[in-house]
Length: 327
Ligand code: ADP
Image (tube, rainbow, N blue to C red; front, side, top):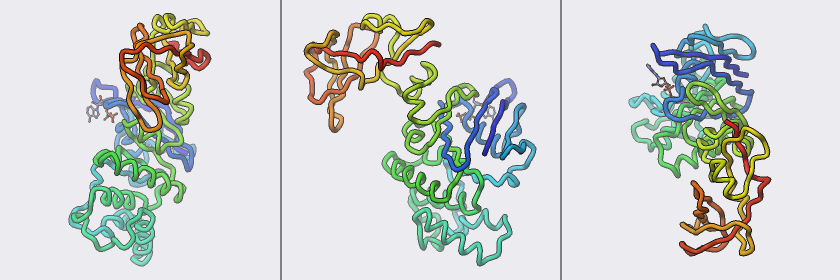
């Protein structure tokens, strides 16, 4: 189990990590998600030992490793640019970390073969890295990271250089590879879909602090504040005034905003609320409809049939489903 407590890293006057806390459970895939400049890479580098913290502690199984050098931590790292050796074969690249472990040649060969099978590149040993596609290189990088059987796998935007459809495919595959080898993983990304697809748990980092840490479902249904709700892409975030005009009042004092989940909106001719249709787009299975409800926000709802822009549409909101925020 990895425990990061109160971790602080400064670059001169710049505070990159500001007392960050994180726990990564054994055999779990934990995503670390945040906007650019929020401190994701700094956190990963500090966990890897590539950055010495100005404060706080990094522990593995309750023992501090803050002063343990990178190569003694037993962690595997993979970055966006893969950093493969272009003039070595696939086997030469994958075996790199194993040579450092001083294993004998037969063990290295067997380990390379089995890890190439694992990442879906059986028989690729003698191929030159220069002849591989982007997706294949990414798999070689993953094989190289996993070959020494690291106790923690640290990934920094590992799919950032690949196109969307390939990314999705590899994400699902990586998920099953990690499950197969029972890896403990910290996966850094700025991409919501990536985090939600691969992670068992998602930590959100903002200005060097972890502001949320939950399962994907928990985070989606119960984000701790408006900023997080907005960052993960929750729809129909409205001000209190806008919600009041829809007849929705917060159940607690101190609320400052609320979100109406699209699935809480039912379009019905006898609905008590109404809006003007400003958009209606087929999204496979249903239409995504945007309604101008005369407030400071549009409401997005789902409709089984396409609606005419400009038409008046009545609807109902399941008031109990509105998520309220107090910050
Ligand atoms: P992220 O990975 O989320 O994009 P980083 O961890 O790279 O964020 O950076 C966090 C903050 O620290 C940013 O404001 C960045 O400009 C700053 N920073 C990162 N590395 C350095 C460095 N080597 N020198 C000075 N400032 C840095």
